[in-house]
Image 1 (tube, rainbow, N blue to C red):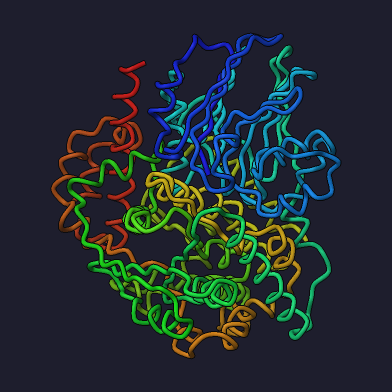
Image 2 (image 1 turned 90 degrees about the vertical axis):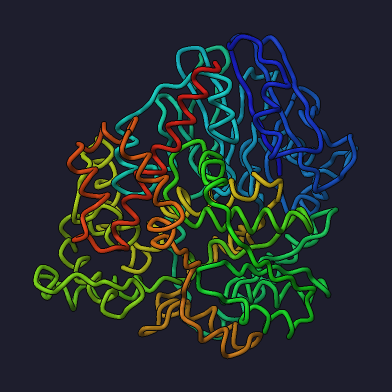
Length: 611
């Protein structure tokens, strides 16, 4: 995994300047290319974290015939693919394999890749740039396009260090409303993410970018369903084993695994241990949060892993600005904090780690999926949400039922409010930030909810295209790469992304039981305490932080806002800060969202002065 960047028709940028902005993504080697093209001067930059073929021969930019590439990611099946090519390879690198595949197959080679990737190929013959991003969007690729200037980078902070960027207040307003950026977007004008499962062709002469999808997750959900439990279980086990094996063995460095007390990471560790005995595993025990380390230790002991429990005490007053500003945009998911700390600690032991990302969105792991399936039965009770008292405790059954009633108020009426009340639920019921993106988001949701997908498939697809793409994957990419750590996600393999959507709904949600098929598989490998445990996620003590360690910093920041006051007046800001009538959990989420916006904006202003 690495950091990449490039520019067309910008004043010459020194390699050291760009490398200083992305050294954390690739501390092992750096490289650059500068060349005059038919459309202007092109510069390509690369920062390498050496994982496969550690030799200098695999440094980038890498050339093959009339091609040059900068590549961030890993292709786990590249050795199998290169065996089918009539080409004599000089390295063992997946980077060289990508170039050979492009030469041999053209754009069709993307459908063959099992991996996480974002890369740009400079094609001298056709005078074009070929950009591509993996199916689920695990690896980022941000682009800036205006007139004859085109830039790209793995991180927004790098892009901002290359080119002055103007704010897109509409996009920021949507972020406040939803807690994430629309289509993995950005707070800057003329800056966008290359969509997941897409490639782009930038014509260097015409200065045009055409983007096209090479894979459709929605179409996978429309395929005939597997209803047979035995068949589904056997296939799931085979594919998960293969996915884990590919991610374990395609590395010249040791690969370990994050191990929580949940099913996803525990299954990965169980199956990985069959392939690699004495696997190194890591569990985080976080001060002030729910501690699942005892469940993780049960799995570690059963499979004789080399296990470490990382007991982390935070220093938020000193670390919070650095953690949040790593993202290059406002980032509202407070689990970015423990993700940063656990990555920092794991890096002390190794450079490659397996995680369970994607399992919930593909196999039905969230309790709200059960609620969504109940909507037709409870929609007539929605009026109770306006009568019943607001719940005080987040983890209570009453809170769960109350949120279902809130969802029911908007069911089949206001699609965006329905979806946001079911997911991020930050300002819902209190404030509405009207932006042009609200309408686009509503139209997107309407198309999905009125499509032929089953009700469960609708929510799984929407979560993959919104929360996973715009929140969970960026969270782990930045948290790991800020610490020069590579995270690999077996559940997001090509095989499982194509397989899971074809499972019948009853194999994902059965009654009140979530992730039914994975729980069946877990019974074969894990202790009852693990596979019967409810879905918790990482219980971040946000309320405790906001009302304790970070209270003074947050209130001081919001008393003299630099950007929040463009969206809320002083009276509303004061209400969010001090109104005791707002439930504490809700108030903490609102305060946190406003705070992260101010923290990002502070760095944005500082960076603008440097350009």
